[in-house]
Image 1 (cartoon, one colour):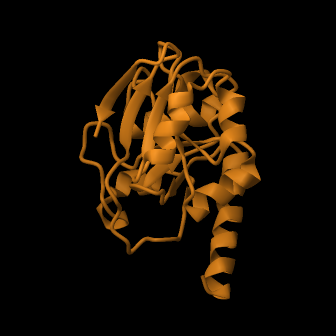
Image 2: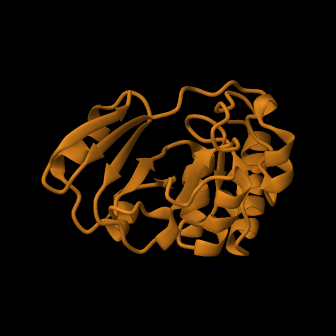
Image 3: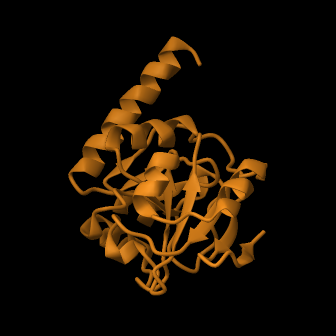
Length: 194
């Protein structure tokens, strides 16, 4: 990274953080597709995302985290196999784990599980370092419409509906959405999306 692109990154992290801290929602690049996000511990901000996406609150969203410490703050018990899957995964992998806590009630599924993904992508990682909280991540589309593979494909309705649009990676085409694997506390493994 050049010094200039580093200062742009830091400025965008600061801008996004200021919006999130006030309960706002952001449109941002992730390690997969563009996402709509907010503070995962703020139920009002989470509700804004459901409203924008015109999505039922029964359809849970995933939460990004930046390391083990954050994971253990949300899940008391993390099956050993979860760490093995994350170590072996070559592409972004979302794990659905049981008994989430310390996050907004409306981001947790009815069965008390929560989808999480550990990210290394610099913007997301550093933003969460500053927030000291997990970040909601859901694809930047109205529920039921195709997932946009680049910033250009995001509908004006979504862009107008968020409180801040991150000015990074807007020319890049996204990778595929993550693999999703459900792990229960009794170590059952189920692949939801390859």
